[in-house]
Length: 339
Image (cartoon, rainbow, N blue to C red; front, side, top):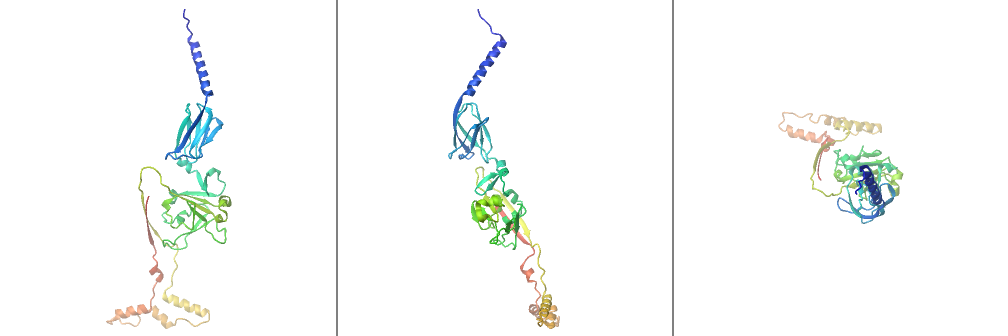
């Protein structure tokens, strides 16, 4: 004689069996090993792995990017994090070997700053540090990196005292004024190497610039960082499809203010006045001044040799603006860059 089990009782029995099975699975622990790499298949050192919900279950990768996690639930979830990489959550699902590939996180990179020989998150930095990227610098049409930094970093003053002669037009930079009497220039590090100036560094070659201003930020550099530190990181090649970018900039520069140069007659009058103030005889007589005022006086325009005589008079009594003859009002600058 067959006995049938009521449907409600059968459902409850099946639910009870599934609960027991689930508890058994959760209670099972395994050891997980693996390798953490980036998108270029390079092993990552110091990657943090931890079991979600159990802060005591965690580890970091070794020098070869390998890790081992012991006695973790077979159905656990592992959180994988690393500075500059996108965070991932991995479902174990009973696997004992897991290889993980982390992708670059450009947004996270924007939230870290270079500090001496390492990096820190912006929120954890207590010293006075400012950063600027090449995207911000390329907005400026100035071919000089020092001039392009002017006005983009708080506390940095950049002054160009000489004209635009290539090679000697480097600007003088001050970080929060002058802190020493032996020198006022900040310490410049390009990819970790000290440099005297940045006049030969192209703006398009710069990846980012960190500026350390106060004593807490520059302490690691000692007295060399008394006037602040500029840490410049240049661009690096990346894997991917080759790209060609050409940037052409045409600009014109001029002096903010130009001196007004006196003419010949004005100079002689001022010179005589200076001599008289010193109780000395005048350097130029009224006859000489009159010749400079009108060098063609006494010449006959109908004379066949008038042109040659007038040229000789102008040569003997010139009134040249040598400053304007040597220096143009505007100077063109053309910059062509290929990336």
